[in-house]
Length: 112
Image 1 (tube, rainbow, N blue to C red):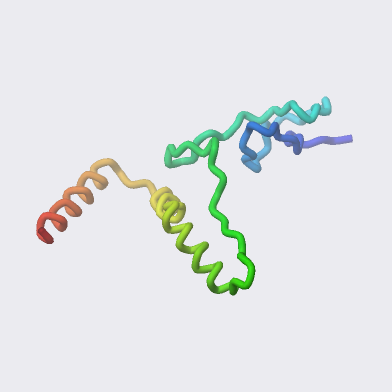
Image 2: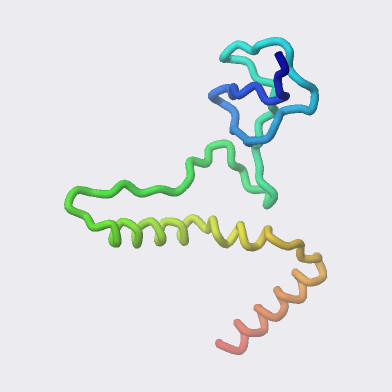
């Protein structure tokens, strides 16, 4: 019987990463409370995800799907999930970040 490195079990206090825990196959079955994965506590942006529950809405009684979808989009915008995702899609050099910050400050000064 060949087993993969991923046991399929994650402790309740850990975040499931979806990746195999190691490249070595696990030959010993794990108990439900054990895991070989180290928990993923932060994402690439350094934001703490240990207590992150995600964004979701429940459709209320007599509420149309369009209205619930509008509430969901508003909740996603407020949680800044897409902004963080887009900012982490490509690496920006520190010098470029400083240059963009100076440009933003000059635009703000011009508006005042």
